[in-house]
Length: 95
Image (cartoon, rainbow, N blue to C red; front, side):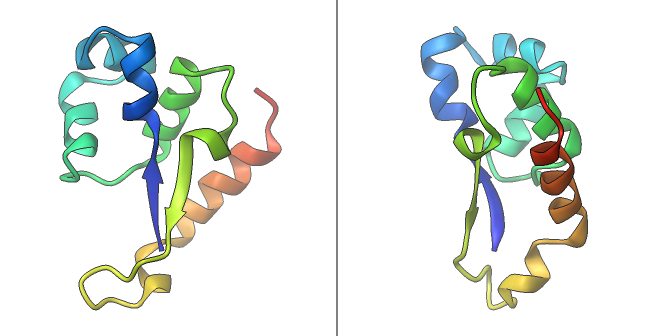
């Protein structure tokens, strides 16, 4: 499994462009661009930034797991314990 996001689809109705989205997330435009293009994985800063930019959405609305194996690698190897920790931490915290 790999963590995926709906942030970019949701941003179309709320933010004019990627720069405005990045500013709302508290991230650089290049970091947000790299995640959008699949050149960078979703990390803790991106998840926290997504909650800042979309405070009225639940984490389940912003992120989901894709259960498809990635390039022949076992699904369990793709989702690291760090991602699981981040998701667990953010789902138990109240925003």
